[in-house]
Image (tube, rainbow, N blue to C red; front, side):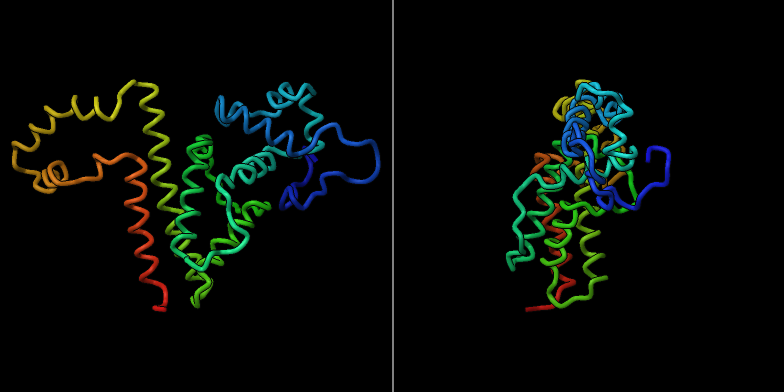
Length: 240
């Protein structure tokens, strides 16, 4: 199928088709090798050729198990989705459940920064994604329409993604330049004081003098913003 028509989902294709000798590899082995390589050297490095070398086989042989690059990416993403233990059912406390989802997503992205390079509009419904979907929507199943759930969860996921992309990018820049947050604030201090002395930027002055967020750790910033998002979700839910 490497050059043929692509199936809607890799999970719609049986891993072992028909009779014959036992497969030498599994999708799980191929996926795990791809994730190891991407974690170490970035997503582009996780090519079929590199994965095959890691497994000790030829690249073309892997297409029997994973027909396309898109299929491989779907398998990789679904495999890393569950970092924390997600219960089979929501707890009944939607705020705690959505906090667990948000923390799981942040930790997943930080463990696998190559996810920040993926921009995929097409949804893929692997087993781990479906488990998260059932848990998240079940947590918000409190008498509101499913479209409302979609909007609220999109707001939550959008917040988490934006913040964690920023964390990953900042870490990458620090690694490349050696510019720590403390050093950046020290070196930018003289210019900031020049701006404040002009008196033309009163809101900027308030941010510099009064804002607490820039002085928080990434974890503290994440939780501060997350609590505000959850407060907005609470306002859209029916009163108990």
